[in-house]
Amino acid sequence: MSPGLGRPLLRGMVWGLLIASILTLAILTLKQRRTARQPPPPPTVKAVPDFELTNRDGRRVALADLAGNPWIADFIFTRCAGPCPLMSRNFQDLGLQLPPGVRRVSFSVDPEYDTPEVLQGYAERFNAGEDWLFLTGEIDEVRKLAIEGFLLGVYPAEGEENEHGPFLHSTRSVLVDAQGQIRGYYDLFEEGAAERLLAEVRALAAKP
Image (cartoon, rainbow, N blue to C red; front, side, top):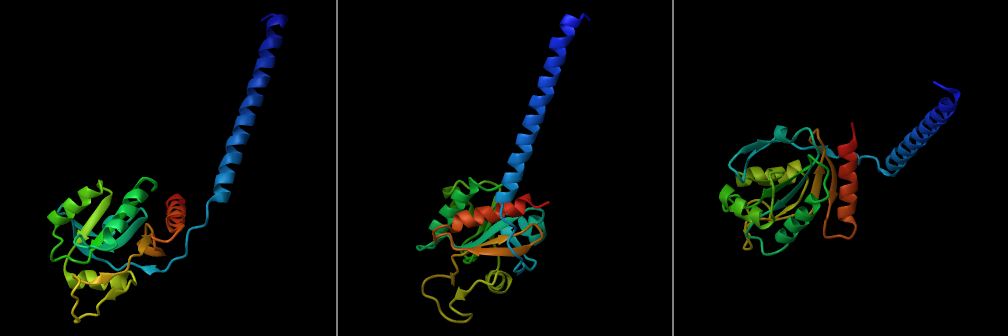
């Protein structure tokens, strides 16, 4: 190679290495900034007890089937004339922003009416995909899961009459981590609650 050709080639290699170094530094800086902005995962509240209920497609779903990724739960019923449709609409909106693998789980508090077929029709109203489960089972099992498992109040108390349907329930959503531990409660009707939930579920999803 002649000296006249060697110098431009050498300069090109130097510039190439310099540009590659600058790009690498920029990528590392961007990753560090994203990590710095990412809030820490929320603290653990308690473990969700084991359960086995029926999904809208007739499949039996246990707690172990949800392991491996965070998930978000709420309690609704399809005949609800109050907040339930709005809660489900909030879950529908969340689905557009959740990290891959994060599922939504809606437990019916009216299992005697909310058969898998009824839940399937309700789910279709909200364009629910396979990552959104609608679970039903025995009324006593669902009540116990809500009160003891998720620490959510239900009304009326057991044995009392309720003229408004099965039983009233909390409107809060619950974040559960990949190990089945409750990590937070969120009233999605409150300003900023959805943003906080999304930030914390992303923190859990990003945790190695």
